[in-house]
Length: 604
Image 1 (cartoon, helix red, strand yellow):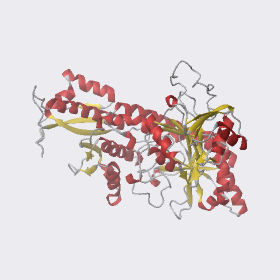
Image 2 (cartoon, helix red, strand yellow):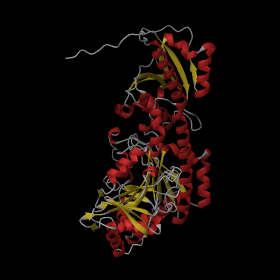
Image 3 (cartoon, one colour):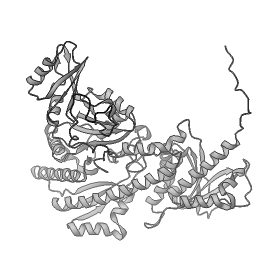
Image 4 (spheres, helix red, strand yellow):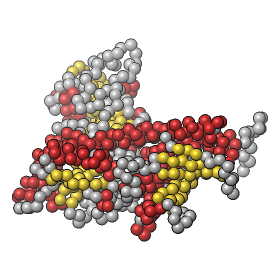
């Protein structure tokens, strides 16, 4: 894309004036300047020259006006995609994501490999108006003394205006797409599916950063990575977490470089203790990393000659669901093992995201965007978290912002459609009775009731444990009251807690029974003629759905529907049943009398 737009041009300026500015700065141009009122256009011979013109001439003064130079994109080709340049090199992804989200849902944010010290990203918004607003607000804005530059990535597939397919009159056809930018006409691919997270001894953090940040800048530049060192979090801790965003190869290269820096610093400071490589991984992935009977870990150990240790489940907290994977051995072997470990974790992550995507499309009325339950789920802001206590890894409260945010905007856009049924108002509260093993009550309540309080706050639901029905009761009833999102979050964490606390075997899937109450007159609709509806429900959801016969309605004229299965099966069945009940309620509403006029408000 070699065509440039020159804005804020003085009305007194002529073609010779602009030529002089370009010649003085030794910037070549092809063809003549096309001058309009207040702006102009010109072609550059290649992409490198165009970029040089943008960087050098932007901000230059001509006849009392400060020029603005950027790539020229015709209105018909202005898409949802922007390129944002000159981003401060140490800006954290969380800050950048929050800034971009102010202007609308972000589908993807991809870092572009460049030789500049500052960062460059390609951003795709969900709609053109969001991209336009971001372009208007961010272009020319100042962040940490850096002036941000924003330009459109053109939609080359846009239908041309008029008979000429080669562009506007007087201009040549566009050049090839920008190197490093996403292929035009296709959705940009996120650069990293999941970041690499590692723990380093606090005494080596200074060496990793370097004097005035020189060392970390070099690592970032050489590995094309975005590296966040969470040094200010969890003050006084012996270790600090580091999050590396890049391609798998970039993450591995940055990790190895950091290991080499720590090793050199240990020699220089006569630090004699072994420095193992410590990786952090969400507990959801660790079981699959270990493999059946530990086969995956044993194979990695045999192939690389190192020893691998994984922190016990007992160290997990409600704020920190990451396990520490310790690799002990030479740097070369640890680096090779790290690649294999992260490969397994990424495979697990991709599998979970695919399953979550499938289920989210099947569950109407549920906004998974705001859940923050899985490693890549976005939307959990600080308001959802009371903050991690001492000992939690920085940047990773489980009831708050996830460190795995590379796909956050992508999921926000993919899942936003599922929230449409409730877009016009607040969803109704629902009551679900979930039955758990009696021995698990203590784990759900937590010490002095802390876990159930935190869970209730996180989910936005009322959660209570009903009294035992007898001394020998093998199950206890958890009463959950809240809207669909709250139900999803609360039940998900209860299912997960039971698995974490080993109330189900390592090869056993967590399956629980849930009861919901429906009006007695609607029970037939749930069952369907000849049991057709309930059978279809079971086939779709993989849950067992039973409406016990000969029930006596309670004082509210309601009967129980029993749902049994794994988490997603139960959730899907609950949502489908609520859908049926919503249809029944709509049909029960009185229809307006033909010819009746709505009441006219009285004038005051």
